[in-house]
Amino acid sequence: MKNNDKLFDEIGKIDDRHIPALVKEKKKKTRIITAAAITTAAAAVCLTVLNPLGLGKSPWEDYRIYPAFDYKNQRAVYDEKPKIDYSLPGYFIHWNDESDTLSHLFTREDMERNLSRNPWKDGDNFSELPVFKNDFFDGYYIKLEGYLSEEELNGMMTNVVKALGLTEEKGEAEFYYEEGGEFPLWLSAVFGGEKYGVDTVDVLIWGNGYLDIEFGCGGEEKSGCLMPDFESKSDKEKLKLIVKSFGNLIQYKNPALAGCDEGTEGGAYLLYDRSRSAVQNILNYSLSGVSFEFNGDLLTEIRIENHFSEVNYLGDYPAVSLERAKELFSCGSFLCNIPDEFFKDGEPSIEDVKGAELIYYSLGDPYYKPFYRFYTELGYKGPDGETLYGDIYVPAIEWEYIETDAYTPDFTDVSKQS
Image (tube, rainbow, N blue to C red; front, side):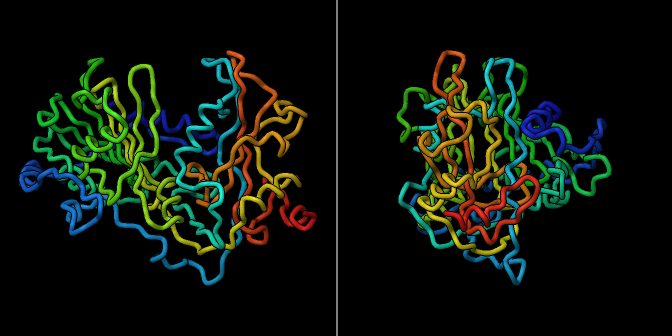
């Protein structure tokens, strides 16, 4: 596995100001996961279909990769609700030379796909919404160093091995550290892939618990785990096949398809854990998920993100309805990274809004907090003349709980005006 390539791919998503220096040398540790232990554990594993109704005990309950999370069972870390920094996450609109267009803009297809995926629908209003502190954010920097110890990462690796039924470890598991870091940046290991019809299965667990699994990393263009006739199946059939094959790795009680990103050589199929709680449903959709990446009928990579493993619950905050958010938008109480000259009349207008959704933003932010994201039609066109849309954000909690600074508008005065 090309660990450095993966690291730089992730770093490329983050504004340069937030990135600390990294060491170029890796720190290799003595293997703690023994081949004998893996073989013994894997022998007891039988991949079975998840019980979609959640009846009885799922086999993966004995080797959970991530702890179960229900925000209703969380205890607030402060006696009083702190004010929340609502500055936008660390990305900026810039010119993309490869596509000859601006980055972070949306086509109509992008907008409609996002709106159709989101379990929140227009009309779903809440009196309160939870806010979380992001422990993976250290002041001004996004911490590339994790917070999981070597022992905890090894425990996760052991459970991943059990979930996948891997038996042969090729070489030693290796830890990588950030310069001066107390905790590992990641743990990587390579296993035999005979069970999946590939030479190797590469497993990388980041220090914050994110998980990457690659099949057949031998430099072959068409390497991957064969999922017969996958391309020709319906979305429902694809979901059923994925859950049947990898349910013990996904570890969702009610896996649901969040969407499909079709590409020229395959696509990514995104899953989340559907909940009966409307708020938990939005949290699961926004802050956790599994991506299965395909090249035709070949599964090449699985990625799992679980932001619940890095949060502290701050409490439930009084929520703003969609109609109220539209009023705030009209009064200028919004957050936007798009230059004014790209809007039709030189500034955002509620008349140009073509869609809205409630989300939790999940990258490069000290808090995981709810936004209304408004897709606003721009005067700027794409390279083929297509209409483009920019994202404008309005906080989904009441203004008195928002911290105002140089990067965040004063919502207090604007809210009073409306």
